[in-house]
Length: 105
Image (tube, rainbow, N blue to C red; front, side, top):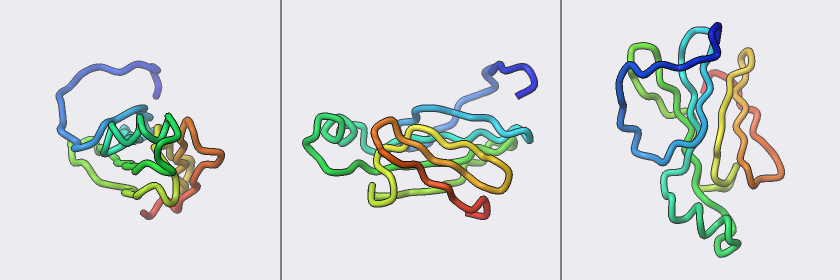
């Protein structure tokens, strides 16, 4: 966050199609994505009512922790997640709302 830049330090398999990343002040990385990329296309074209979402946090030690796994009932096709204080905001480029979650998730 101090430099507004990223540098590659490795790679991690996450089992989903990641979209956007955000970095917390402590160095953790939040990622919003979809576990089924083809369903994202169908959702975007109006062929499906919802698309699954997967939000996870990558901690400085490289561990990956799921924050939200959702079938699309809470939010479809999550594209981003950011931590604001003790809250986590989850957004989607095609939803008309965002989720505000307690940071203890």
